[in-house]
Length: 119
Image 1 (cartoon, rainbow, N blue to C red):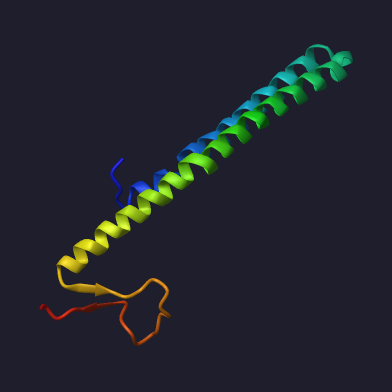
Image 2 (cartoon, rainbow, N blue to C red; image 1 turned 60 degrees about the vertical axis):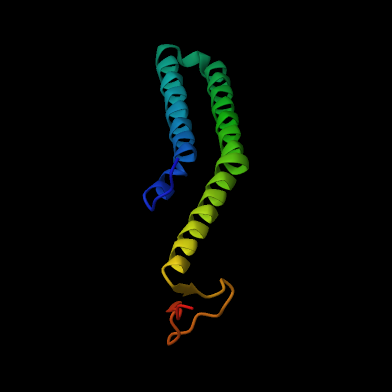
């Protein structure tokens, strides 16, 4: 996926989708619980256990998606961001613009980018 300022916003989508899926699965389990309790109030204990099992399953699925995001998608996004920044810096240097070191202290009066005299 090419990097642009707009694509950075989309790297978190798998995690957001996993969270939305978790909400939907828990809501569906809760709806089923309520429907069964309405039909048979005496079976509330059995239905509650089914509900709790469904919630645990949904949470386990979400945790797996979260772990996948943290171990794969997040590092990939970081690496792509670094490569994108390096490419931009290279283009700026070609244009004669020097970029100061990343660890320099930022001053209110010192510019972050300063022109370089051509050789």
